Image (cartoon, rainbow, N blue to C red; front, top):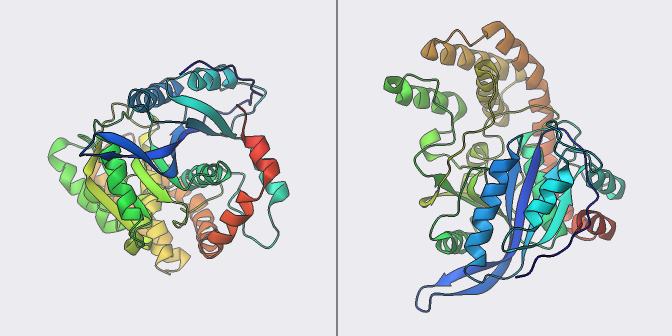
Length: 381
């Protein structure tokens, strides 16, 4: 597979970029040890500042499929950065894109950036709700990647995180997930990380970790031990319900675990699928992390139809309970409570938007698929 020259318009940035791979999906035929094509997929990867880990992950998955002669991989890139500039550390985005395009097994490059956002907003039908909000959220990044998959004519999105590596039987994992998604009922299936869970627990006394996990499950309705995990090969059918999109509100599990609460009949956690991961998540102050986790309690209350005050009270109660359990001087309760007060109205607005997005999602797919100008904007190599 030869190297290919690419011409890129570079897009400047903030510090967050997301990636994806698209390929004709494969399933291992155990009797012949051969791969055959199925529906198309995109392997998505969201990256904050640690693009080196993102490159390593894409390289590992690229080598995995390259060595097995799986055809036609394409990178999809979703970013808040500017095409004509660089990341916060000064790294030009085009250099990262070129490095990724030259990895084994990768041939196409698709980009969703601010220019793509502007194009999509210009083409967006006035009759349809739009998930393209200006403020960043976890769900907003996932929705953009799912729209990019639609633009690239892919039926599935499979998400992994930076620092993840292809499991030895990646084809077997895909076979299980696609069999589930072909059942007609399941629309979202994920694996688990090897040796760790999605929730961070490094700040908890080891003797109290189970108590902490029980506390999270009590307030959010999400058991971290059995959580739908967005970065562990979480596979979305294109008709799967979208996650919540908030205007600049970061809420733990709003792009994965909370979907299992809201849509239990279409979500499946595949315990057999284990994804190796050696990188932690984006570093942040403990107060901020607790606010993101406590916000999940507010999301849970609002989704169940509880009033905004009850959601706020539950979030603050949860924040205080976590602080008492951890007993760390790093947690500022006054700051955390203030941040929750700022985010809860955005969560409430996001839930109202989500209700319309779920109802309109098939029409959104059809509309985006027909946006030829957007396809030309997103295809950069």
